[in-house]
Amino acid sequence: MRKVIRRGSEEEEVRKHRDRATRAWKQISKQRRRVDVSYDPSMVTALQHTWMDEEGFKKTCIREKKKSGDIHQPFYGQWVADFMLRQDAGRFMLGKYLSDKKIPWCRRRRLGMAVAGNTATASFLTKIGKMQSAGCRLCKIAREARGESTDGLVDETHGHINSAGCEGMATTVTAAHHSIWRHLYDSMHAAQKPRSKLKFVTLDKESKKSTLWRREDFLRICSKEELAEKAQDIEVTIPVKESQETRYNLDPGSFFVNRFWGRRPDGVAINEALKIVYI
Image (cartoon, rainbow, N blue to C red; front, side, top):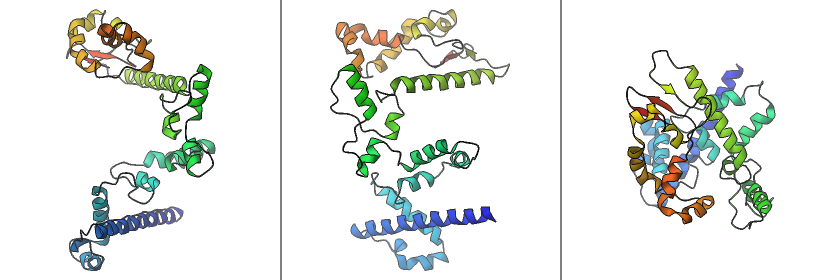
């Protein structure tokens, strides 16, 4: 009975958000004087007994509202509702995690705040009038430690502080990234079937491309010169980072080639039979 009540309340919430989106679309349609009889409120009752029911009508209005092109406003009235009601994207794992009593409440609360967009970041606190600046505090501390200017700070959002783009979190995020990829790489190797032709070549540690292409099995697939020629057109389109400008200014001609061969892929596997390198 408890599950039935919960399901009923969830369906009621979905209905309310769809109604809100439908009303918004009708308002936009009236303002732009693009009134179609199939979307007129007086036609809903008639449509229930023909080719479109009320729910179909609402979904049609929502699709039309999306076509209007205003991506800076939530379709369902709230960004959280947009996230949870997004079509063809299941939220089963998210709901399972949030309802799992074995997971500490503080972790579930952090995830819920992240999804709701109300994590206590400088951007959110500025939005509700609790801070004067939305600039990232972690980036500011990192710049002050280096003696650099703190002007032009990036907004401190939940996505920013969880990315390597945050100067104060770059080392931690990069380490977490490497750890996750190493776990995935080892898991794929452990799940490999005996008849698989894949050969995992960086199980112990990461290797530079220049080191990998000294191996005979790589050279049999593609020579170093051929790979450099194919990669050159792509490599020159990748912007030069501020930390790389000194090396670039010393020798612009060889910078891109050296940068390409100095890259360290998270994981590499090869299929000699098909002559494919997976990076």
